Length: 208
Image 1 (cartoon, rainbow, N blue to C red):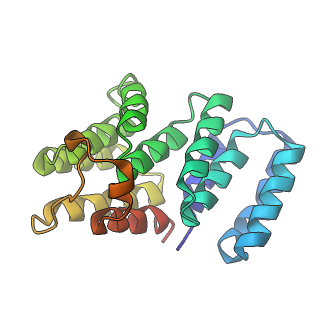
Image 2 (cartoon, rainbow, N blue to C red):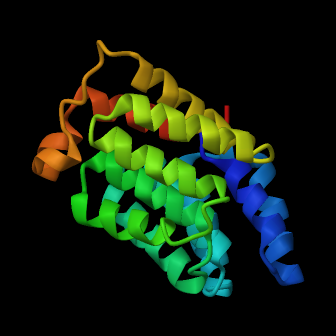
């Protein structure tokens, strides 16, 4: 399973960072995928202790928790990242995607509603509409919005890969969503569904 390093690298070029934060990220990122989980967690916590206002470090921590399937902690870390920078669209998209995966209706609607207030020319707008249609089982409409979003985003390769895999999943009419947000299925049930395992794999393999 891979951490979404490309998204973090993309984000750090878009945000203002102190030289010390840049140095920490430059030290962490090249070997992040290859670190033992315990070592990675220790280094992240040390970095956060030194730089508790870093939205990028909390984004990385959230990605770590997604990989270890500690979903409540992942949500908390994503939301802390967003508290530090509410305009961090990548983090907001990722927590929206995670909410879809977990069938967490309130979280999904909260963050997708915020994403739908951004400019309609943003690829995140189309990707969010795509997630909403996907959640409702409207796969044809989801594909239309995903593909339009891809036409607007040529820079973030891991995000593009995520969307392409969602498109393939939507095209496969033999793969119904066992747990759909609009059906109000309990989150604990969703965690055990094979379809959510597929979404978890998509999430974790975005950097490949």
